[in-house]
Length: 451
Image 1: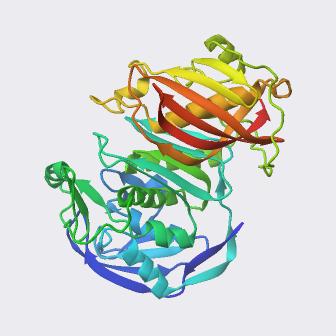
Image 2 (image 1 turned 30 degrees about the vertical axis):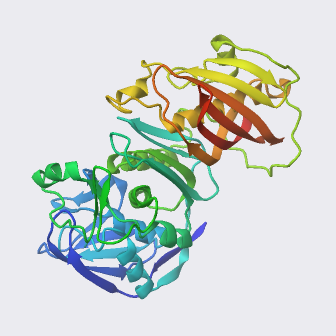
């Protein structure tokens, strides 16, 4: 259980809305325990309050909009991210227009406001949502997943439709890392999107003072980039703001590939649904009924299968792994030798993810290469007699690097070495190659549990 928190005193800020272009004054106010975050419109004749909950999301086109009755508030994610990042659970966001001020396009102005107001602990406690089994959402080349984790971690990959400015960033979120590593990242758009956005009544308040514009290979901004990976860090900022709409702190590891507000909110709904119905059907990774507590990983490796230079075909693999099409990402095993395994995946143009990743420029998602490593590592450990009938449960990934694109027709070679294994938890290093060139690598942690 965590302690609820609110603001110590009211504090205000004025500016223009990013999409509406209207002048707006915003006041952040303290709120009583168990009230959550509320957006209050004071310009509509009668006072209207809209709880910041996923059930009130009305639109997700380029920003997140909340509505209640005939009232709405758009572009709420930057304010919500600041409150969530600092652990403020109860607050009122009072507005005299339909959108908070954009400031500089990041959450920096709202962080300054929260510091000015101060944070006050409340006697009441709040129970976080603990992710106990993997949950996944995917659509049109976007992949969002969350797996069990003791803290709140986000790993994100972003790029445009052509794969330009591809960036990866991973962070364990705390109030300190939120403010120093994420909060200052500014919103951005591609030059060719501007005409569409204007025609659809968006970015009326946008300028180079509050957004970065990418034109071809040039980055248009009024100041130097605040982070090397500023684009993907802003995507993480949006994820934090949108996921705060579950209404309580989260404990899990978010992995996002090409996220957007619609996908962020879809994942928030799945998380909330899972929290309300924990005994529901398992998602994608076929996790165990109960997430086993992680045990310290020792430095001495357990003995793995005594079989050496063993090969397995697809039917034999499916006798070991619970995965099936389209999520079985290992076609054959060519070698098992002590603590090492070599497997292959034939990357066909028929893979379903190529329909949206990306049309006219098909590339195998990096997160699926990571999953292929995890499955190969699972085969290695599940081949042990003591582990027969169990499930290898993907827990975490570290030192992840995607070096080159994997395209249709490639044969992905997956080499895994088990680094440590003790009890129910194991750690392995994976390297994927195509024609002898490294395309991705990672260290993965997984646990074993009975079905």
